[in-house]
Structures are given as C-alpha cells and as structure tokens.
Length: 150
Picture 1 (cartoon, rainbow, N blue to C red):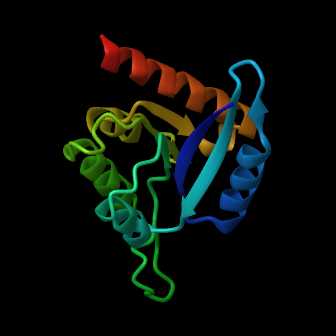
Picture 2: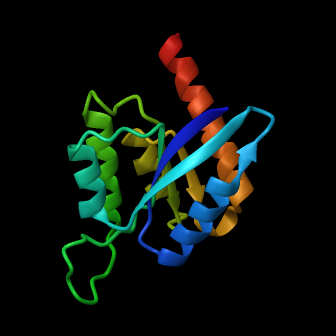
C-alpha cells in the first residue's frame, strides 16, 4: 500500500483534529493508498519544518495563521500563509511539492494570489468535507507528478 505524507498547516485545533483523524483513518482502496498526517498550528512551526528539510508528499495550507511567537490574542494574518507558499515554491528542495491552499477566504483576489504564487489547488474550508479533501490530495499529487514527468 502506498502511503502519502501530508503536512497540514492549520491554526484551528478542532479542524486539525477532525482532518487528522479522518485522513489517517482513511484508506483509498481504489488507489491502494493510505495517508499519514503531520500537523502544525502556525507560521513559525511551518517554517521550522521547511528549514529542517522535512519534505512531505503534499502540503495542505491555511492562509490565516498566527505567527507562533506566543503573542497573546494575536489575530491570524493571511500573509503568513502566503509567505509559507512563497518559501515552498522558491526552494529547489520543495518547489515541485504540491500545495493545496485550504482557507475560508473565498474571495477571487485571494484565490488568484494563491495560484499566482504557485498553489496547485484552492479549496474553501467551509465547503469541503474530509472525503473531498482526500480526493483533492490524490488528484493534485497525480497532476503534479504528471507535469514533472512530462
């Protein structure tokens, strides 16, 4: 069975738990695939993973993230998610790694910016259930693999 390693960058603990439990329990018999999940809650944690060179098969990236510097009552900023996306796509170790932007920011400007910075897919959290996210992960990995081979 093929195992897909996912890094999920999400600050909302409930969503992290919901999707982590759902994804790790999910096995796709159609593609003989199972998933493993590594979650991080903020910008600093995500950047640390990248600096350590930890390369998953795919990243699911929220855009509105706190800095992770322990600032009380910090408002998550969408620029942190965009900075992570820029870092991934600018680094030769990660630039081919697919990124699904997974956010509740459903405006066209945000979606356009995500794609312009190299996102491979854009999904609105409030409109997605776990099995749709599984399908998007499989589809995105397949598309990026096919582009890389060509």
